[in-house]
Length: 247
Image (tube, rainbow, N blue to C red; front, side, top):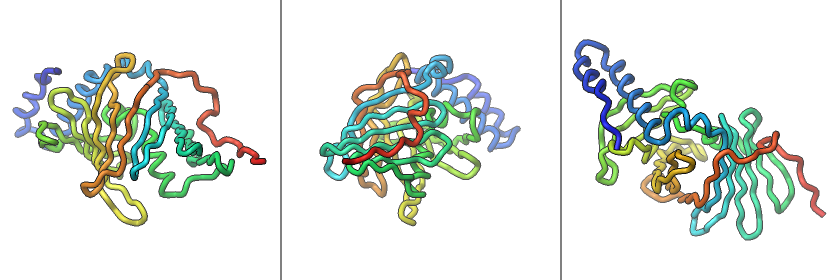
């Protein structure tokens, strides 16, 4: 769909004259720019300030309905419903993430491990879109295949310490997988997140099916059924609410 940038050829020609790490970083930056153009273009992405999505998550044999709001740069709120019970979680990008349980009406701060993961996942843009705007560096890690599809592999380093691998389809330049090592319950594991069912929302290409696996086993599957661009969001919407009083 998107032609190879001619300057990539020169990168390989010059690799014997410049540092390999610099060449790989330059190639990775070119791939990131091509990814941005493939999913929308920088201008259209900048016009997207927030989104609202509805769908469901399948986990441990259950199907949970959810509504999610996200706003730049890293604010998020989700409402998940199961058997008439609503669990609301939010993060305003500054304070600790919080949880409101409709069954008790109580609002509590997330535990340290859950809060760390929730806030890390709150970034509005994917790391290739965000390159240059945050402490993100990219390195080209070669070519490989995922389910028989040739892909480019990129090493993403955030905040100088957090590393993950991103895989770009070499025809569409969409991100189709991301691998990151997480610590859960004191145990380190590599989590693979797969992205598929890409479709357009206001000219921006988004994945509508997200599957997470660890150690080869399915953890959960999320399907977005509807996505709205730039919904109206009240000030303070992502902040910690006041607990409701139960009769």
